[in-house]
Length: 347
Image 1 (cartoon, rainbow, N blue to C red):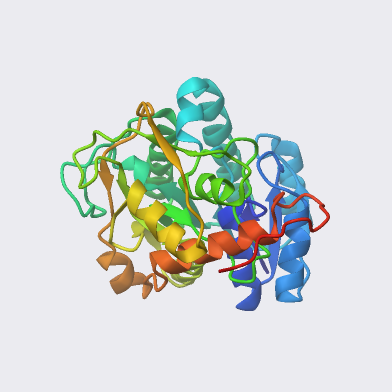
Image 2 (image 1 turned 60 degrees about the vertical axis):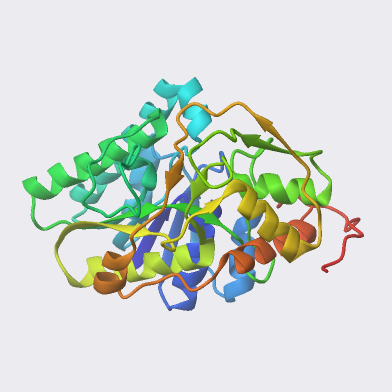
């Protein structure tokens, strides 16, 4: 029996695949490679010394997705696949709604057809909208300020309705805060297409000289230095949280949601400072207008995950920055094949 990992070649999915294989699980990976790279799969095999099946399939191609269920004995599903850029979702909302929601509907329909009712869903802290206070607990009022967040919120509601209709479903919803960092080996990391949407790859690309300066979106928020505050979590800690969630869906019934974060917020400029300390590189920046859909402050209360999943983040902002930098200098062109021309050394 295998664990189906949708979006398993992506940033968070690939790190989770590593931890699943190390823990002894058999996995089947589905990914359309729209925002990932085929080389990731060999890196996973290299790090774990284990093999697995891979299907280049888009979830909205229901017929091809069904072949995966026909050809494999699936026990549970960890569902990462989906478009994820807040700014992009504001520009092309219909594409986000179609891709994220339709793909999840097809996945759940096939899970039901083949009697697979154990699911870990990759949600987001964006479902909390603009929180009235922090830290954010799982029982906060849910809303969203952008189409990406609304797709996650809608899917959460779909999953709750699914459980009400059939109590045999076991579902854990994981609300991520802000994943950064990379595998400590430097072999897996965040490799965005084009200009990065997320803070850390933008910082590392400035640090290595690929980009001239960091764009800071707004410095007039009600925070200590005017820049947005987020709860940054190391991607390996996040991956390990999925193993704990999988243990829960394999052993109990019901549906529940958990925050995965560190419980502490850092401003953009605090992250820049931490990165400069970890890397020894200066990160020049310029302040630009706020991005549509961004909020001032967002960090988690993580007590529920500690108590009910037995999980807690253990890596600090220094580890996140150092591992991100190691990934960048070892892979100056991401996962694409390259000749090692970088003369930058770790400080």
